Amino acid sequence: MKIIFMGTPDFAVPCLEKLVNSNHQVCAVFTQPDKPFGRKQILTAPPVKQFTLENTDIPVYQPSTLKDGEALEIINNYNPDVIVVVAYGKILPKSILTSAKYGCVNVHASLLPKYRGAAPIQWSILNGDSETGVTIMQMDEGLDTGDMLMVESTTIDINETSEQLFDRLSIIGADLLTACLDKLELGEISPVKQKENGTCYAEKITKAHSKIDWSKSALQIHNQVRGLQTWPCASTTIFGKTVKIHKTILSNKTADIYGSVVDNKNVLTVCCGDGKCVDILEIQPEGKKKMDTKSFLLGNSVELGTILGE
Image (cartoon, rainbow, N blue to C red; front, top):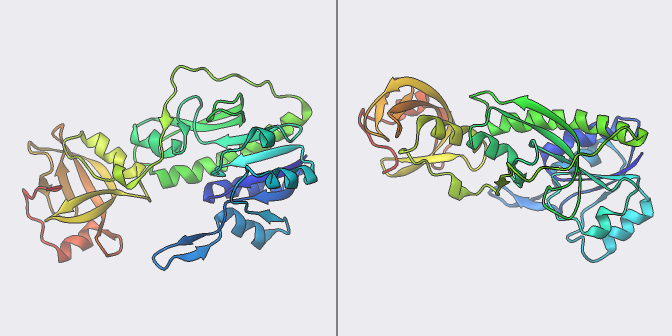
């Protein structure tokens, strides 16, 4: 099939790479415009563009809008069989959704209808789910409401971070996508409508989600730490200074005062609202690089009974 690919972040790259190396033809790539990145605000191409330019001769388009008709004209000139959309970051108008023979097919990182929206991977971990997956979906004008074409599930480990799950689901999604397109071309796909019960909206993650509330349970706080890895990261304060918490594990210790440090030998063990504790294994003081907690404690004296978050 002739394919137009629309995607932007790292998550989309394995899907594009898999298609480039398949029997299908990727005739054009659409991605978001280059944006300033980092402290120096250097204009940086999105990962999908970087991969395309470094590994193929496929033309790349970066329209700032899809509403003025120019993008549709480009698409129509290629006359694609299908448009594949993977974390593109723009809402597609109906004119584009219906412009290809097989319409627009989306790779979505959840078991729909659960977690429609922008951040399904993070929210599956934040909510402590033990299972997630990838849904290949026929796009319509709703927000992740289209018919499901293929689904694959996977378990989530209790210590798996969103970064690790991103990587795993991107590979699962790439394999599932190519299998789906093969079946779609052969007429072997039977679309399944989504149920409307059990739907959660996975809102965009912001820095407002970072602050740790130590009155919550140890499991909730552990899920927050791994769910917000690597951005924006869970955070708290020690002696009034903000620190990012990069890695925790559930501790077998118990205590009475939430937020209090109950062990300071090599790790920081902190009591949570349910009396259970978490061990902080990796930490990042403000303005410094991430380090293991043992190294942090060599230069910072955190006494037993210190209350975090004050």
